[in-house]
Length: 380
Image 1 (cartoon, helix red, strand yellow):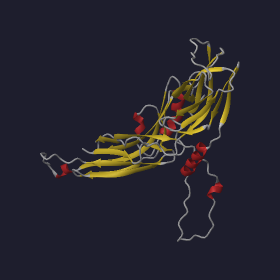
Image 2 (image 1 turned 60 degrees about the horizontal axis):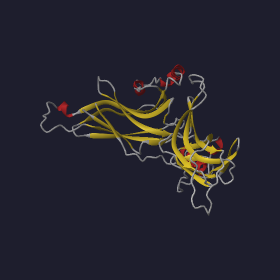
Image 3 (image 1 turned 120 degrees about the horizontal axis):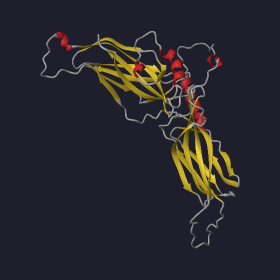
Image 4 (image 1 turned 90 degrees about the horizontal axis):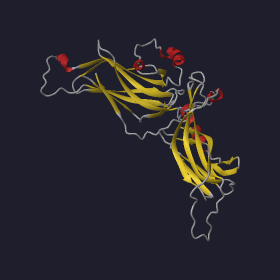
């Protein structure tokens, strides 16, 4: 019996274009004290081979997506003529990304109590889609470790992880110009930024910009509120901060609620039916009674577990703020400085006004690897 244990070196979250590393340990447990070996061959456990591979599996909802078109398009991608190790065949859905298998070991022999550790290292493709669990489509990533003894079936160990997609900037030819200056072997080699470094710097610059945008929200009867959003691009884990100005309103606003919503669009080519509306999911919500207020503010945190904006041939994910304003036509005398007692109205004739404001959500510049490290193991 050989125990196989796998553990990701740097947590479960990675960027596209980043290197992922996984420690794979093979252990032959020590024999119990009462067990007596019958022959010299009993002392060793052997393994014919072990290999590892990264793949991304796409699962779709048959009620929302045309599966026939996807199966035809994905068939050519799943074929790998160089190996019979096809770990995704047992999973639902189809593979959209797979790396070449890498051999960890061949003809491994372990004596009782002995263990050997190998490190699997792979670069996640820069065009890899984000990990995503939506209503119509799901993208999930795994490192699959395959092992086999002689004349036995292949045993698989799967290590799930999360990918945050970075749209890497295109590097033009002028960036790769040849350096014709004399080469001094005693000078330190100048560090050149990788495409991942450039993408992270671009992401930092994009989400750090503060350019307040003001929106005059009106209905058919006049101005309801003036809303200010300090920026339109955010990172996972940030707070969406805005202000409400009711001081110049001509329509009385009684209540306001704001929700952070994701919009999932299935591409026209794969969409089942003629529905044009996206699938909406609401996350954090801000709710406030604002009758009599001149100013108020909004603080809406973005969860770390949600998926940032991304687009594939199959699906597109967008984000927005969904506002609901409850207004009334009744004019009320609000309490002043000399008012001793004041009671709000017992009933009001109200109308609800809806407004949607698009915004952009991007990955964090540092992957949120706050989860406890998990080990995955199996026995062969």
